[in-house]
Image (cartoon, rainbow, N blue to C red; front, side):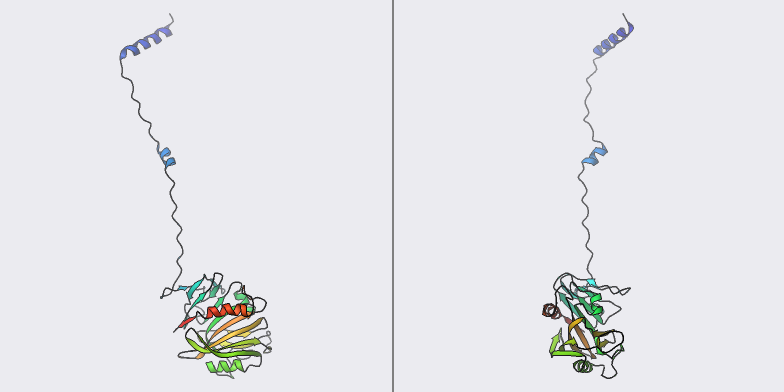
Length: 272
């Protein structure tokens, strides 16, 4: 008999006679990698919204950097407040698309741009813009400096504007804006002052906390100027609404723009 058979037969005999108990099955364990694969995915933390700055009264503010070029700050619909301005100003814009220029480097100059307007439009006179100048006086002709012929006062500015033969003035009447009283008038370009650097008419100059020379060029269809008294200051606070020719903003020209601009100015509140 072959040996390999004998060994196999012996092995069978030993197994049959041993009487060893049957083995117990152990339930399979779950490996760490399998557990990780079946765990529910982690939920990502929701993004944190950037807080909007507010003033001491809790009103939103939108300040442009004083470094580099003048870049307007985008606004959303609702009420906002200026920073650095004296008197301080709160105002309300009706929709997104408006922007403001409020810089610490220019604490007496504030600008509001409706949708479709820009700083470039303000500089050329072709844009629709609302400007607030804390302290304005009559302009000298082609000098960029205050007039030496008219007093640098509220009364001096009003007289300079209403007697200037280079502009057409209409609609002069009493006005009240945001707690300040004075006059409102409409101004249109008539003929240039004759300055060598271009065609325009100088209207007023910012002094004190304000700065800049403000004029009306042919590119501006008309302006609405509010000349207002400020307590403790013999200079005029000036609100200027520019109506650029040919659609200076998404609101169009003339009454279409003035109606919206006036509704914004009507929300102004000045605080000493």
